[in-house]
Length: 287
Image 1 (cartoon, rainbow, N blue to C red):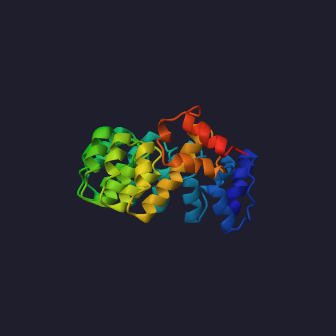
Image 2 (cartoon, one colour; image 1 turned 90 degrees about the vertical axis):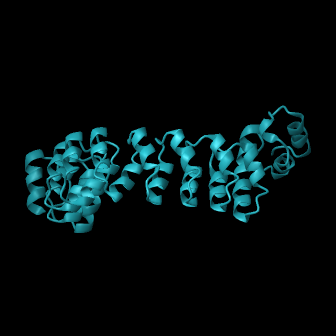
Image 3 (cartoon, rainbow, N blue to C red; image 1 turned 180 degrees about the horizontal axis):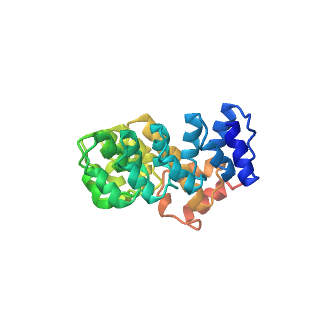
């Protein structure tokens, strides 16, 4: 490391890492978002694998260093290059054929991987790679639709959480036999309100809990969930109702009396000028 750092300083005049830095400090610098490029360049030649891994997945690593690390003798280092969103397409294309299976699977997860390469990986029928593809937000809709019927429930659950999954696939997954897949649909930030209405009646309480926490759940559904048979569902729904009343009707969050007066009414259809709101604030004014 001393030779590497000294050489970097001689070439750039900017190396800032002490050549005698401890392993822990070198690892921290390799991962650091503010580490200067010339220091990362020096650390990329470190004899310690973990240090090079840190550089490999650092989004601030210069592209030419990423290209070099993609040919590192260490499989874990190449794996971390494959996870780096800053890796250029040609590097990810080459790593998709890496002899180390975990490297190929990391390429499947990287949103910067060209779609043509993602399709190539899907054709390999590697169960773990399919799981990573299902999580990739850059995966094309038709691929996610196919993966939505995968035999592995974890893969289907990953598709269900993916923000790029098309609505038609989410509808199908909302009827999945595995409740964990349905839970993933209910937790998707982009799922339609209509589908959340359907899932609010799911027989599994875990699904209804995710519905109660989803910001896209219609307010009328939240109110219904405050009467759910499951204690945790009721608690989550109650917790979600309060901030909605506060935001929609201009009531202070600490004004629990006014909030409670409106909680049992159709507050989601009211405005701050609604008579019920005016009365609630008259009886319990904001501080």
